[in-house]
Amino acid sequence: MYSFNNDYSEGAHPKILEAITRTNLDQNSGYGTDGHCTRAGEMIRREIGREDADVHFIVGGTQTNLITIGVALKPWQAVICVAQGHINVHETGAIEATGHKVLAMPGRDGKLTPDDIIQALDHHTDEHMVQPKMVYISNSTEIGTQYSKAELEAIHSLCLSKDLYLFLDGARLGSALTSSVNDLTIKDIAALTDVFYIGGTKAGALFGEALIISNPDLKPDFRFMMKQRGALLAKGWLLGIQFEELFTDNLFYDLASHANSMADILRKGIIDCGYSFYSASLTNQLFPIFPDHVIEKLEKEFVFSIQEKRADGQSAIRLVTSWATREDACRHFLSILKNCSM
Image (cartoon, rainbow, N blue to C red; front, top):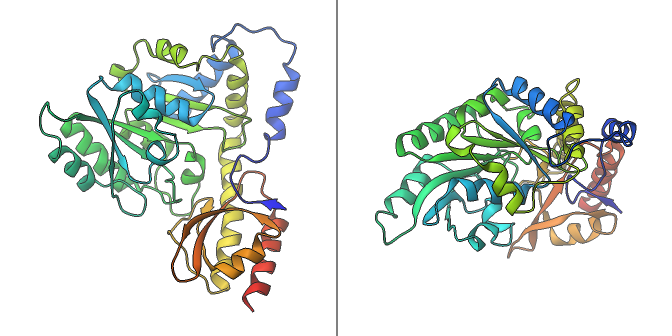
């Protein structure tokens, strides 16, 4: 059984494992105060063109979202996101468990729009309701779509005019930045958000996200919240080492490009077989719509998830490629699909 279930089924890129092994017996100070985290932070600041940014390394995405939103919002404030947003559907109510309401809006193609934000603001007008204060978006989104520069600029401009923080979840940022239709740079994202993160877990690292804070209002005492939420890893240098490697010799982008290339093979083959898609994703997540009997045959050799069951005897499935996905596995999937479709 070959898995297309997610982009973290494999361990880590060999260069990362080699770096960890090479430095295994070195002694480091703890909790992210080591030289590896310092150097990785410097590398990221150069990459994004923001020497004034704070960089924090956190083990996983849910922790990163929880801590960032917790720092940004006062107890009576809320965060706006698209209905399919990760904080709304995939984090066990983590944000709301801390007392901050998630205002989920319909969006379009998995993306939040300025109209969604305005609608949320218009519906929360006084002290009898929560006060929207942050906008949360993901790039790429939960259904593999991505924001254009014009779309991000429009959201950024609205957030500035309405005094809202803009937070971009970059768990799959590498895939978005290396997509064939992308027109955003990582420097654009740093300039157009208050805080965002670069996902390592889904980009070839063993684990880890690099959170970048540009807005000075969000910087003070951030490590206090990290500690309170159990996110100050004692062996923090393990995070620093991984991001040092990811931002050496273009590795971060190369690994994301590979994931996208494997998805391109699957996408083209699926289209050639005459099937359509649930979303217009050009990143490493694909959502083809197959007859249920075809899905049953594919499940005998491949692992994937069901995105949406339909009443017409078809379902949308989710296929995810990674930095380690093999081309021969993609070709084999397509050969089975073609046979199923004949």
